[in-house]
Image (tube, rainbow, N blue to C red; front, top):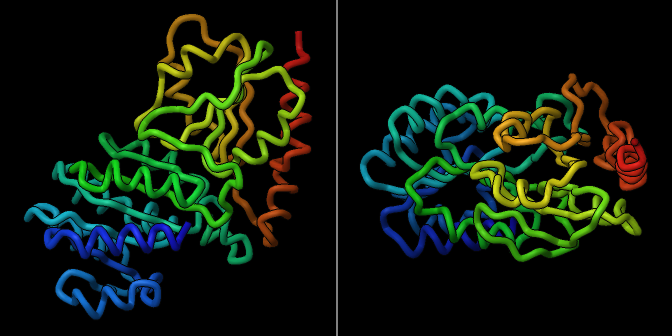
Length: 292
């Protein structure tokens, strides 16, 4: 996905003089040609994410569309005040692209984990949150949103789905329909869900955005039993479920537990420890469906 991002951002900068790219050390090698070709618009600010966000906001207010590329916890958490005051409060737009989704940087420890990014950014009114999980999905969503004038978060993962699904901005994709329940899945959890649901009579809805949220699709397909499966903290979509109104379905949430993640290891070891493997997901969904 990083290569697709590099290509799209490079074309974006080269094709429009009213754009800018800001790096925070990460990505300097990938964008080395842009740094040389457009030194007045492509800058490596260094490890200073809050200041980088503020610089980007100032240019945005002057009519430039900024792109900021960094690591999730340092863009979302370290710079939350700047995102809130310099972008949301000022009513201006920009693009924030991050790597290191959830616990992708599993060997680096808690400082580099960010399963709370979506939950955190949902507190900022008007902030769009997009969760592509393949290179093609990133390309589609970046084309749709890069110039929309809103603060927009592109959450990239290093563990892309092998199942390539064509997506539309802000819309859930109905992958299949069943009778016993519905599984709503976000981002890189799709492959595990498809494997887990083999042989089950369930619908699968695939989401690549948290904001905007496709309430229409969920209302239409939720049914009596609804499974939420995502790589964010538990409770991330609690407010969205309440907004569905009417008779709410019975809910099972399969997500990252809201706790301090103290262990190190590979991504696969983290999935195993958090019961987020396809086998564990299958057991949890089946147990939920079998309840009276």
